[in-house]
Each structure stands twice: as C-alpha cells, then as structure tokens.
Length: 168
Image 1 (cartoon, rainbow, N blue to C red):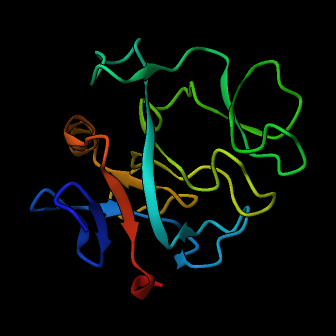
Image 2: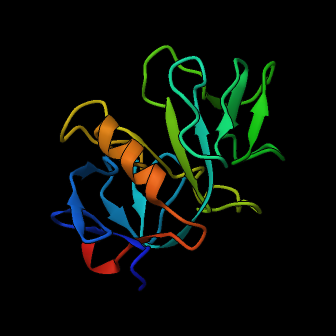
C-alpha cells in the first residue's frame, strides 16, 4: 500500500490519513462478485476515470470528463459493450449517467471488470455520492457529496481503491 491508496475499512474509507464515512454494496463485500448481486468486490482497483455533470458543478480536476445527456453505462452481459460507456439510443440494458437525482453528479470510475469485461462478473464499480448515510449501493462505494469532491480533487494517477478480503 502507498499513501495515495484508498483503503476500505470497517470504520470507513482510509485516505490520506483520514477516515471518510462511506457506504458500500447491499450484497456485502465479496471475492466472487457477479452481475446483479449488489456486492462490492474484494481487490485492488485502479481509478481509471472521473465523470462530472457540468450543468451542476464546475470541473473538479483537469482530467474530469463531462457527463452529457444521452450518456449511458451498459450493464448487459450479453452485449459487446458490456461494462462500457455508451450513448443513447441504446436498446440493451443500461444505466443512465445523466440522472435526474444527484447520485452521479461526480463519479470516479474503477477498473473493476474493465476494459475487457468478463460476462456476468459484474459491471462498473463507481465511487459516487450516497443517497443518505448508511444506505447501501448496488456494489459501488458512496460518500457524502462534499467528501466525494475533496477525495476526487486529491487523488492522483497512482491512487487505488483497496477492498481487503478480511471485510468479506
């Protein structure tokens, strides 16, 4: 581990000497993540992107990419675009990135099952805003909005999300 790693613990996410309250998947922490199980996967996950809503916030970092109307994330294991960002219209199972609620106003992308997705292993694990404290996600890691912005602004190229097996 390095000082730039984000490490999930029972107390929250440890990053840069602080513990940040967070929530994780409704399916718990699992070493054998599968599509639809709601679990957060055990492992070391690189941060591979940062998306943000330019109509709701200023660009948080110089490497952030805007979410546009029509941006989607494919979660259809039977389709070749599984676990990739796609554009509407898209006739396969997907998740809308440009949401009416603020859940995805700021999204860090991890390399879980990406860029070469193994069908059924589970689509994207994002780091995003929580619905409310203690409310679980569909497998992602979620934070209070101001904490998420501070974390997103502080991560570096080498930053990784570490989900230890002893949490499973």
